[in-house]
Length: 457
Image 1 (spheres, one colour):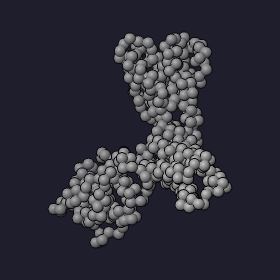
Image 2: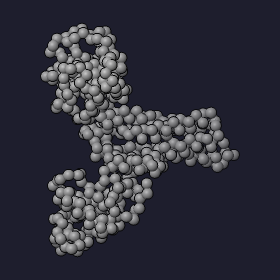
Image 3: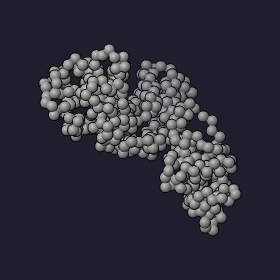
Image 4: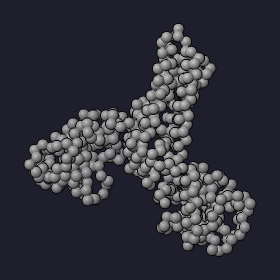
């Protein structure tokens, strides 16, 4: 990712659409000069004081009024990017915002790329890569719990752990390399045992952080719930009831749903992704067959399966077919149509945790939600903001590589392999940790991360 740090960049920093306030942000050495070209303060101040809002008017080069605005200059290094940063707070109409941006571009600024302001903060050493990634997680968080996790990472909680690991591994490497530099001084057995013990402690601490990934992932991405079962058991009715709207077609005709339908919602503070699927049954209809195959393919990738059955009728081979596709550890049996009576369950269904509901009139839905909450709590834990959670797959993979390298280092010492091999493993561990903080992250990874950002952040 080639970035010209000499450029002054500009972008609209507020969300698209109309609003009471819109913000245009600039960053770079020419930011203050560009502001002075177009901003006329209503006061008597000829010079801007840093980090102070000024009221005035924004006019083009011909003196035509563009808008009544507030402007602020944040001089380096006390700014988001550690460069001179300027913000113009104007009315939030698209025309006004666009005209202000166009004037700055005509005067020499360049339109910012997605995430370029945060990228500059990273490149200028204000934040490390894991904290930069947390910025987008805060923006995209769909629940208070997810936002707490992201804020903790943005404050540097994860970085602190990684830097502690890095410092201790660096100390190990220094000792091992000292032995390589002075081969006549063979590493004593006591020192070897001490290095093994130290690396074992680090491995155990890394394991604790790695174990937090599932909790962090669920809080960040949400719980994916698959509504599954044979046709005409009330899957779409259940989906609509949970969403509080008629999102999917409900019909007495079996096989109405032919494809998967996905919706996101926040339920009792939990981010959820609901997936309604085609009914699972034996069929010769090629379109319905494709829908059944897609439904079955979804089973492996979700956190929780709501296996819906019609409790008013005896379960049949199609119900058995649906059950065989489910993982009992991730399945909650939902016995629907309780208002029409009940039939005994086959023994293989009776082994599943079950709840009776009526999706049509929402009877029993609160108990079903309690079941979902309990499943979520069991898998996400009760970690608060003070607890460091691993929530990003890239971080998990890098930390896993670092831990594996440390385990190979321990093995090298135990087996009395050459010190050069042991040092190589420690360097590999440091390199993997550096990918989390950005010290050794390759350019393609940086580009992939920062292009996820919105323009203006």
